[in-house]
Length: 65
Image (cartoon, rainbow, N blue to C red; front, side, top):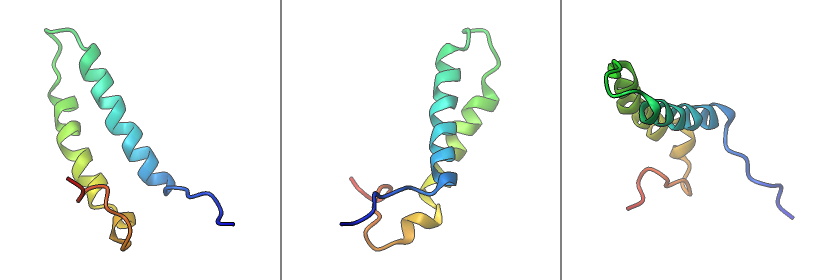
């Protein structure tokens, strides 16, 4: 029996940060300065998709349609 699969902790942390940035942006008042949040939402997916975990032959999260 195979042990349960576990994503690397830093990858999980990046994904949570991405989700948290979306939550913060959604909850920000219309007049709030959201540039920093928007920059995070641009940067985090790139960091996630270029994480070394995805170089494994069977890892395809970022390249799937």
